[in-house]
Length: 453
Ligand code: SF4
Image (cartoon, rainbow, N blue to C red; front, side):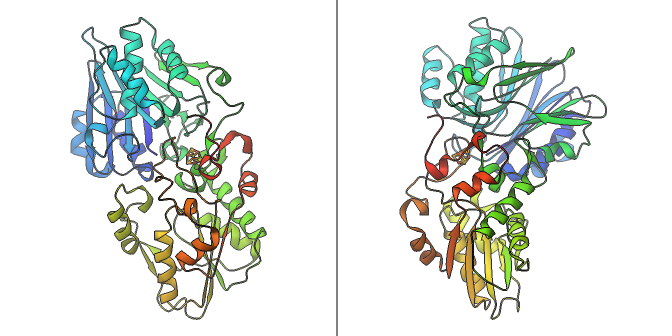
């Protein structure tokens, strides 16, 4: 999971991209970068670290220009290194410059990279964003295709997830894979400049006149003529009849104040909580979320059951999301740094603890123990998704099946490992009811039905 943000024709491009990336920091905290066009060259800055550290005001003075694209990364394809951070840039001898950022994962990365290397294309990283860029540049510069034709050629060959932005000195291109795995929205600011982001929460802070979604397989070109939409038929490029939006964007990744895949994330999370409650007959004194991604799931559950919603766990917001830290040691230590139980709050009380998902189970085991140590008489664990049994190949860094607890243990064994009095997951059929168009979603990490491999 990563976040992208772009802007066309705004004198404060670098400042606005910084704001947009800051709003998308939850999508990746390992590194960030920005490429800005000043009409002569594309200038690049990318470093390991958070947006507020990498793009301090004094660092923006060298990033002058009115077309800019930026990226926040958490590592999936390629190691944790600044070489794999984005944007990637190509400057050609004939003059044109290209910069690209992308959110997703290319599943046939190795095959396509070998093919391009055999044709003399050089790679400086092991990141799939560079592959997408080099694929397009090769087809434009060596094969004589237009950029649009090269992107279309890419849709035939690049398998997997990509919501991408390509900037040249004159134009901004946005395009999305035919399955629409990752979100992407664009809009217009009050001054007429065009903005594009992974999530609508990053556009909201700029008060856009309007925004809407980039459709699967759509290419949008922004240049001095305005916006040109090239709506390709996704069916020509994909193996499924319908789109495959990542359902986990609603469950966990996206911010609740975003509209993702045409629907409100917070409403989907409320629906999940209600559906979880309807299938449950446990009684308790309170419902508490594992903050923050489970807040609305717990609220929906509480309203449906009429059991009070309480905030019993306090989260330290200055610690990153445990799930997206690349190293297991860091992840384990972060749990205690991140959460604490309210003192004198749980004693003798029956608790329904809500979380969005269980990946390895290590975090929930520690949180359950923390609540018990704080005096809770019972801890009933309810999960707003089905068991995660399969790895993701479309831009989410889920571990191998060996590390996924639900791949190796039954629900009863997981309950015992975590130390809960009971454990109940959301049924996959109920998850489908939580969204408006269930057939347009990917559920592969629950059912192993991968749309493209
Ligand atoms: S496999 Fe899971 S996490 Fe990956 S795209 Fe599909 S639903 Fe999302």
